[in-house]
Image (tube, rainbow, N blue to C red; front, side, top):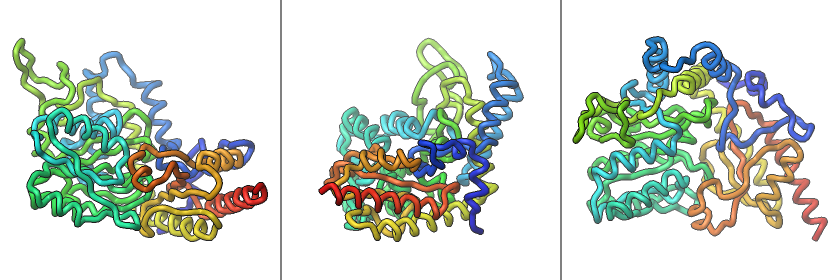
Length: 404
């Protein structure tokens, strides 16, 4: 089933707002996606009608939170009890580092991450290794930007690897990592696996049971949902062995002067007033995606990125980074024009892209790049927008050549 992007655009009020008096072409969903009206309405209705000072005691809110938890869990093939609501995906990864890592890692242990990682799936492990005396090691890249699993095998063969943490889809190169195979190899050597799925859960079907990962982190605002809420999935057996990340009375069943008895997951890891409004809005976003169909969303993304790779490859002086088969992300440089200038000039024409390091500075250094321009696609984008982008880039190249 093909997506009618033009029809779906009508569900997104922000896309109807012009940029620089031009029709908005939004090609930055890897940074954040727009919310459809139905999600915004859930937020508005909650704050207009339902908010109470003590809504933790309100059975209706408690029920709606559990319904939202179940909706999000079923979307990724998990049970409601395995879904922890966090403030974002970054906090979810930090929870694993703080609650699981401090208990299970010791001096000399290895944490293995890929060279692709967003800062959010790198810096928490840097802090943890310093604290406990563990070390970081890396899954190397092949020339096309895909993962070199032989380097993973070399690390696993040491018997020191306790955790493998990897992105599902790189937010720079678009690389689709072979998660199920990574997990199979890691588990065979007794390692736990964390998946940063911030770029995959919005775009492709994700089944945590099939992937067999131990933890998954993602965030709502990249999948048509609100800011301020993210998700940590953890296998129930793993979550039950973890202490709280942040202690408070709300994560304990009983509190004594010297020790406390903690609640069962997921409540053990949610030390604040429940994020009912954002959770209900996230559930609405999930239902919207389910209504479109995640297989259709994935195929739409594949179609757009293949078209973009073909069209952009025709432009003189433009270099694309990453493998042919990828998620809906294309990072590139344009000879003679800085990435920030490319983004600024396109922005004046109503074409919104992103330029810079994309919270992946080590990856750019690894690739000897000062910065890249990045375009990313979602269900509300269409091929004619890529045509407009390509035409604008050709014009930039021609103007740059004329100034030489």
